[in-house]
Image 1 (cartoon, one colour):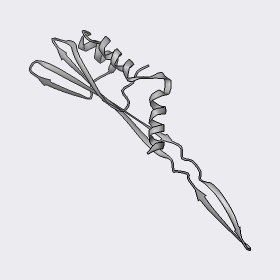
Image 2 (cartoon, rainbow, N blue to C red):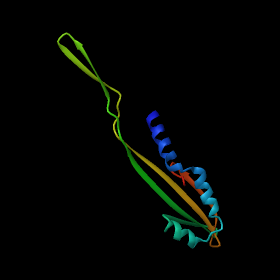
Image 3 (cartoon, rainbow, N blue to C red):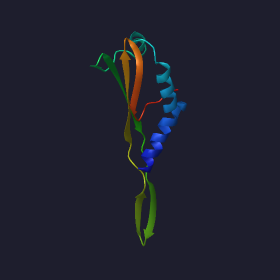
Image 4 (tube, rainbow, N blue to C red):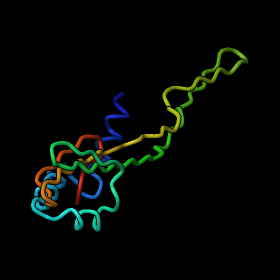
Length: 123
């Protein structure tokens, strides 16, 4: 668990990308028209409509392979016999990060946005 926390912290800090910058970017898009959003972000993954509002949903997934670590070996002698034991080490791990961002559109303009996930960051 400690290793996974370290890995995730390293990925979040990579490139100084932060969630605060992501929120700032979304706030700056308030008032932009739907066409500008689609030109910038591409077609949405899902579209919902409710009470003359449209909700455009964008999903982003990113997987990365975190390398493992070899164990440390210790050999002890007992008479004419050598015993070797490995300590520590761990296998490579695939870590998947994601972000789901939803834009609310009313009268063709962005009026709100929300996000959730482990990789909602911007530079």
